[in-house]
Length: 166
Length: 280
Image 1 (cartoon, rainbow over the protein chains, first blue to last red):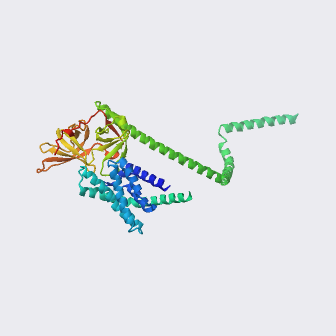
Image 2 (cartoon, chains in turn green, brown; image 1 turned 90 degrees about the horizontal axis):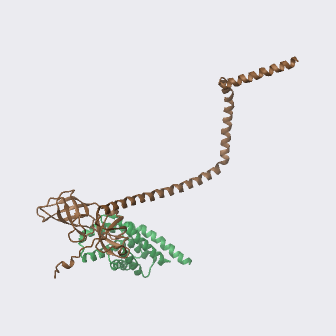
Image 3 (cartoon, each protein chain N blue to C red; image 1 turned 180 degrees about the vertical axis):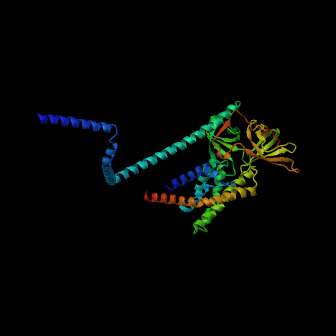
């Protein structure tokens, strides 16, 4: 049940990302709903092997993006690695950990993908990219993460209680 | 005998009186009298009717309240339904207007063959300006084909699957289009940016360009057919020390509201990469 719930949430987040969230811009930045759902799920579900959800999220985003699927997958896996590292250190402060992982996760995912495109000949100016894409995206992600976290928390509770009943 | 006569006279007299009264009533002569007589009766009747109605309302009000609430719910549902229909019809009208504009555009450019497509996705990454359309190689769409809207140039097909294609918009940072500025008839290169603004570079200093000049595809480079409208020059930046002038462009296409586009399927982009000398 939990697997189905997580997959559905990530898929819905990817659809919402492609159709709605990309239109909500701050400068040239946009929130990454898939990343927020992924982080909220990993932090609340007590998932032992979150790597698989990183792969699923990367594949879902990669399907609709010009970025290669592998690049999206690696981007999300970097975030998961970071979260796993944080969980061993500040696991007693979930909200602090959520905000920290959202902040650095956004920088990691966007930074990795921008670097990939820069290596492949895109004329990106890194300072400009940081100022008008990455930082505004971080702000939007930090703004959206709390409601997403609470929503995902409810889904986690529902799916785990259904599992207990079954 | 006298008694009978008297009775007959009495009857005739009474009959005449009745007829007289009737004639007077019909003629309206008795109205003041009737009004004076009837007004207390009518007043009493009205007073009684009001009290009766009030009592009846008091007895029947719970039933009426339930019925009214039911009616209210039904009417609210009907209003919601009608509102949905209105929104749906408005959307249909917008779509028809859009399709009509596209049809006009296609008719005005008879030399091209078009395939219409819906924009289904936008790239989830804000620094990549791509959209996914719902036509692919099954519909005759190939990589490199230009994409336009009723207003002007949108971009070109970057990747194709059987049923979908990815379009790189001209606002993308890596997009570049050879253009011609009218009426100066000067060639320039249009590039996108991370903020979705498009600008012109490589405009010769000797050419006079001004805000309001039209920017169209030139056809040079073989990536786009010539004479597709892109936009107007919004501002020109030129200093004496620069080799070339630069200009900001106001595009005719609203890229934030793209919904239906046309792919020019009879245009074959020219592959010039083999002709470019190897740097090594």
